[in-house]
Image (tube, rainbow, N blue to C red; front, top):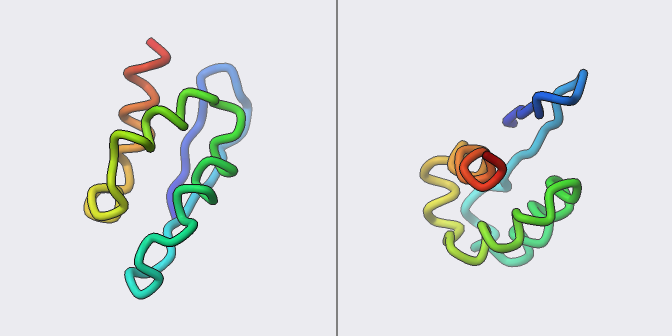
Length: 69
């Protein structure tokens, strides 16, 4: 489980990834729901594979930070 917090929020949000046995089916859709307050995540997810995300799950938050700055 991973946590992230926007500067203007008073609470942290969570996201998690299922194990590799699922093969990534539908996981990007679930990640879009976790980050629904940030429409930019759709473009970020298009550029990343589930293999990359599993290898470094914090890449989502780092890429989102880059886009929001």
